[in-house]
Amino acid sequence: MKRIAKTMLGVTLLEIMLVLAIAAMIIVMSIRYYQSANANQQVNSAIEQVQAIAAAYDSLAQQAGGFSQVTSSSVTALLPAGSRNLPWGGTITANGTGGTLSVTFSTAAPTTLCGLMQAKYKNNQSFSMTDCNGVTYTSGGGST
Image (cartoon, rainbow, N blue to C red; front, side, top):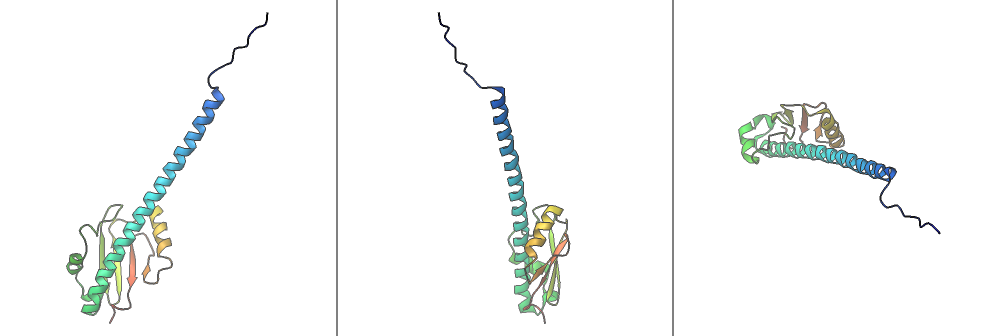
């Protein structure tokens, strides 16, 4: 009599470990992607806010004869609500003299975001960022 070999059904421990390793790699990569996307979104939001404040100051400075003639309340009237709130907490204040506007963050940008912001401002002729506490904007039209 011949014995009929039974086929084994199911998965081995090695196969289960391989599936778990692949799933873990996918989860880690998606978390890193999410963190990177979140950081870029915060930096872009802060840059847009600084640019909006600079544009408002620039517009009023052209009429008034310089940034030092523009009041913060007149600029706030031109900006949407909440446009002075930073994505990482804190607020934005601005103070101008002549053709230069200093935009200061009440809470310094986190170091990971600061590096991204400095990289984005690197090739911009009007904006400069020396540290994580704010930005300097220089206008050709606002000075007298």
